[in-house]
Length: 400
Image (cartoon, rainbow, N blue to C red; front, side, top):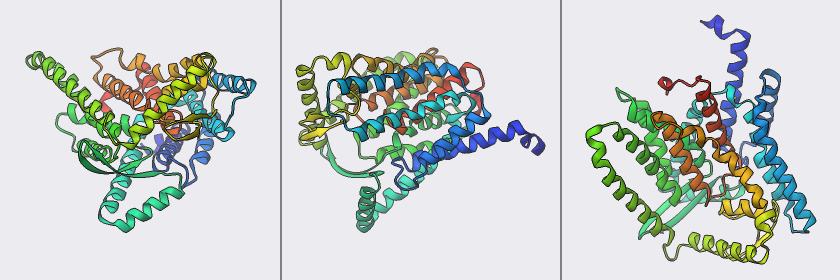
């Protein structure tokens, strides 16, 4: 057995898995790259390793090259229009899309499996920090100051949602844990006998979302669980006829809750977001050409929400239109493409559950600025890897 593991091919694959594991761990634990300062180093090392030892899948050049062509074309158009460009932010956008290069080798890795332990470690860190902040005001103040000096890896909030006081701790990488949460929930619901480890991991991750202090993250585990419960109950003939009325009631209740949270008076976050929308309308009304050609990546515009010039807001899809105009459809296609495989067959319950999770991620990403950074790219690695492994029948559901 150990002789097989030491064979050159197996050894190279194990080293590759170890490097990818390390990269995922660094991205989840230190999303702002302000503590360990390892993100760029590990990424470059991993890309170099793949260039040397694995053959790239050149099909994905059709995904990578158009994205960067759009970025630089719209940048040149912004320069020609003499628009005000924040060059640091522009370089940040280019750097944010750089991880797409890994799609050339992602088919060699089971990224969803590699991400599980880093996700659990990250959750343990989140709950440890949260527990300490709840029981110690001194630790809370220290963590707040430390986070301020380290790219706000953690955001501490105190809000009132529908009259309830909520103390939350938002860890910036929590969004990238969605697919792993889905897998643990799927394993819990579909394993006989029950896998205790999967249940504990699912509960651990769900609690991290519940204490995040943000509406979108709080609702995420309920949405994922609801989607999988629906698929599970649909397999039972006697229950599924009663399921549709119950599903409608739950959906209506869920939408009412979202509406109440989104229109809550006195919420500063809502005021800022709606201020951004007003400013977008004024911008596109004054410059309709931006809807076609874009204002350019990294360009500044005045937002009532912030009361100042800004290069980014939380309305990601509107921001893409402002940056790239009609060319934003090319970038959106990169994000939407995995759904063509995930939602293709409802009988493939794991794929369909992951498809539901991915839709939730895309919806949440519309009002949170993480689609265009390393967290969004990590999600793409996870789903493109799963999609490829499913296509070539390498992924085995019994191992989930």
